[in-house]
Length: 363
Image (cartoon, rainbow, N blue to C red; front, side, top):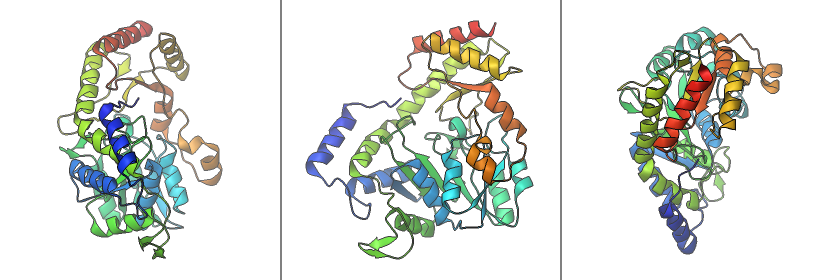
């Protein structure tokens, strides 16, 4: 649920009244300001704003050289866009299993599926907790692979004490309405690599370095000025949004620690959650029991959801077109996990109600 205030409304009105609404090269004044601010937040040299998170993933894969015939290793337990971006880059999707503690890509399983056709690894910071980027970085360097991080849910997360995305060659962020900050739609790509940044800016705008002169194959991935204006305000509020999410998460954890039936989300001092979603696993529970709990929570007006119940490798297109292997941890998670709302609009009293209601359903 987006948290939009009067400041965002005023920023939009100012942009509408003063203009411009967009820029032919995708580099209007609001976009450039947002990019500078986002790069500073992400702890990197460059940020390239685009029109959605899926575009960010596709452009990033193209910018690191993924091409037809290459393979890209991805998790199956994630949103479909992660795999779609690989397919639209002309490459083959190779699925690897997840770590049962974090639900992110398992470095050990990644190592098992690396081949001489592998070009990149594409981990996802699922629910807002960073993938094990140090281990994945080591695998990438060992095999000469690009490391592209899907940080769509990780605004405000840290890994090894640094912002999520820093350990990747390039990181991709979504600014969809449900994310920790939003521009309605929108996305950002961050990198320390000057060449990758230049290529991304070309890809974003039909391959044009100047109007009507295309130097490589690109697309229209430009972010409008109105979205960037919202993003500037939202980014200023991000730390307070994440602080409220963390406060809600900590309160909920204290309540839910009373049961041994749930595996609760983890966080360490150096690996901090963005708390995009508070996700629990029903220990030794069945899919039917998980779904019944969700049904009863919704009946009590609690917006709990089970995400990724159909892992990508089980979906029709991928099942028919790609060699699939057993992903046991992915299969377990899809049947046992569910997420509970802790966004900044949720009050302390509501957290108390959510936690105690869930406890009653588990006994």
